[in-house]
Length: 101
Image 1 (cartoon, rainbow, N blue to C red):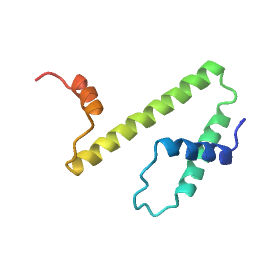
Image 2 (image 1 turned 180 degrees about the vertical axis):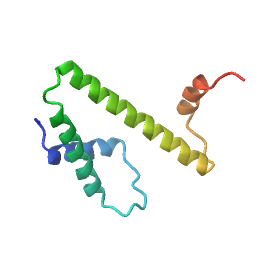
Image 3 (image 1 turned 135 degrees about the vertical axis):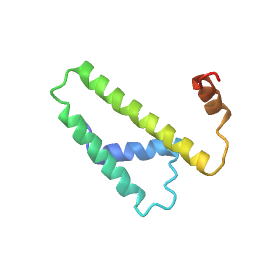
């Protein structure tokens, strides 16, 4: 793997400067969670070394899409649980997805 988990964790932290993650009151250290995720992703990438470039890209895209969907669902659940509105952009997206009554 061309990137080490420590390097990936550092890149993750840099991305968080622009788009911070609310770790709230989780009983874990932020840097430990980052390190855990980075190690897991590097392990996954290493397991794909025998994949073709196209298969690797498709796999990473599928994993990314699943994580973005999971993040969206969790975010919406939290907003609903606390009775908070979604942003205008999210509402516009969701209104396109809703079935006509």
